[in-house]
Each structure stands twice: as C-alpha cells, then as structure tokens.
Image (tube, rainbow, N blue to C red; front, side):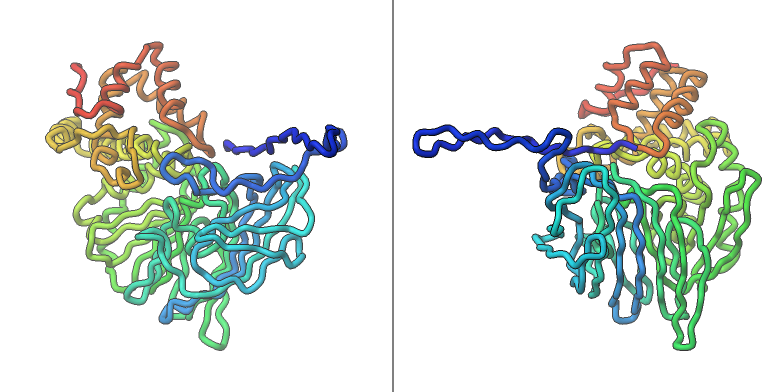
Length: 465
C-alpha cells in the first residue's frame, strides 16, 4: 500500500541581535523537530481529503443508532503510526458534536475548522511510534452533498465514496491510508445492521436492542466502506470451494424469486479467477433492497443492488459487483481523477460476462450501441469533481479497455489484466501505472492509443481487427 510521508522543512533562521548573528541550536543527532501534519494529501479533485503525518492501522467503531430519530452516539478509537514527529495532526470529521477526545488515554485539546478536526497532543508523538486516538461523539449525521449518511423511509444507507466516511466517524479520508476495522453497532431489534467484512455475532438485550459485531480484516480505504440498517433477513450464507464466505441478504419485503439473478455467481467468480486472478477477500455479501430506482453500489466485500437494477441490468449488475471487488476495492485509485481506470476495468469485466453467457455477437451489439452515445469528453482528464459524473467515465472508459483488447489481441490483453492485478492488488494505481504495465506486457509504445482514448475530446473509432 502506498503511503505518503510528510517531512518537515527546517528553515535556517538568522536573528540579528545587537549586531550579532545568533544561530539556533540544531536538534540532537538522530532526532527531528515536531511538525504539524498536513490538512490534506493533495488529491487533484479533493485537495483537503486525508491528512498527513500518520498511518492509521485500525478503526474500532462502537455505534448506537436511533433509526427513527436519526441520532447516533458513538466512540471511535483509531490506532495509528506516526510517520513524522507530530506536534499536531488532523482528522476528517463532519458536523457531529464531540463529547470527549483523548490521545493515548490523555484528554487532549482540539479545534474544528469546517470538516477538519485539529488535535494538539500535550507532548509530540515521536516518528514511528504507535498511538491511539479516542473520540466520543453524538448527533444527527448529515451527508456532504449526496455523499455519506442517508436516513430515509426507516432505513439508513451509507456508502462512503470520496467524502462520506467523515459523516459518521473521524477518519483519515484518503485512499492511500487503508486500515482494518472492527464494529459494534447497536440498533433497535427490528433492524439489522450490515457493514463490510464478516459478521462475528449478535446479541439482543431485554430493552429491545441488538448489537451486531463485524470485522473487516483486509485493510480497506475509507471510501470503500458502507453501513446499512434496515429490515433485512439473511437469505443464505455458505463457504464456496475457494474458501470465500458468500452471504445474501434481502429486505423482508422482497421475495425469494427476486434472487434468481444471483444464481450464476459461482460461474462469474470462476470467470474472474480465470481472466484476472483469485478473489481478493475472505468474504462477499450481496444486499437486495426494494428501492424503486435502478441503484447499485459496490463496496469492499459488499454489493448493494436494488430490485430495479436487477430487473433492468440483470446478471451484468451482479457481475459488476464482483468485478469491482478486484478493480475499485482491491486495486484502488491513487487519485480520484483516475476514476476512469476503475470504471473501465470493472465495467469491462461485466462485458466479458455478456460475451461468455450470450456470445460474442451480444458483446458486439452492445459495443455498437454504446459507440453511438455522446462520449466526446476525455475520461482521464476530469477538471472538477462534477466531471466525475460524465458518461465518458462510465461508458467510454470500458470502450477504451475493449479497444485495447482489440489492439493487443486476447493473449496479451489477458496477460495485462493478470499482471496489473497481481502488481497492484491491495494498493493503489494510477493511469500512468496502467499505461506502463500495458506497454511492458505488449512491448509497444501505446502513447498515441491512450492519448486518443483517454485525453482527446472526440471519441475515436475502434481499432480494425
């Protein structure tokens, strides 16, 4: 996993006093002066996302949710390693009221500036030291735009995305800082709480509340997290031949017949293992809900699908949920402007299922239809966060991957998928990383190809076969 280290810049300051030049004392050999961790890690589109000076190892979230009143009380405990000697550091945290905050068990002063939580420990935290931050807080969570905590019609649905994690816990909100998670989520017993990873157990008390204990043991970027609270039932849970725990949840109001689109998941996993590599996580859960809009979200070890999206997109939506476990969750983004890469690779793996299940002609028909869309926007060059919603990122990007397959031929193309995935799984990759692997595997200079497909405005024609 790529980690961004921040080093203080020591300025030599010369004081002139009574005509004399006085040089400041240097720190003892082998030590560094404390620095303030940066309030952002320089993402091109989200420059304030994430914070510098430390690397979170683990989040422990103890959360009580009053669903009807949309009120939470929580304690978040972060375990981190200082990557610099820290005089102060930041966390990303939105709107909720803090009741207490401590560092290494010592009550610690803090400031809040919009969504920055600035923490000033009594003593500097030495570089490479392990430290803990505990924040006790409460309130009514609010989304950032449409990102993060949403409570509607008796259910809570949180898919973190670029900024949303900070709407329900203090976080180092950047893809470069992956961490493991443990959760204790207490909800009224009529509800079930679902998050990423594996359910370890649940306990109900006499007052009508149930606590769900979950763990995400594979380090996860905060953007890939999710929380669902609703009237869910566990439809099935079993370990597949590869050792992956596969669980299906559905809202109580759905019927078992709505799950028929999931029947080919074992075949889909087999195809992905063949063309990319082994499934990257110990578990995978699918949640089916009754939302009328065609809605899907693919978080780490957890895919959320509406009945409408299953009706409209069928097995392609199911395959996409699995595909984005590889590209988007295991292989993540170095910068949000590289979103095309994840949408392109994950989306194209869904196209491969169409080709396998319905034949090459079905794939060709779909490609021809998509080529008729208005896709004259460069998918790898979004200038603003708003540009991340452009259709080119979701349609031209997989078209670019298909064009690359046509250019390289199947043997080299699938070697590229294997190589790229093996090299970057569990970490983050950029557009430049993908281009470098493509040129390495193909032995070709692909500058003109990628310029046309990723950076020129006009949608280029597909290569001749």
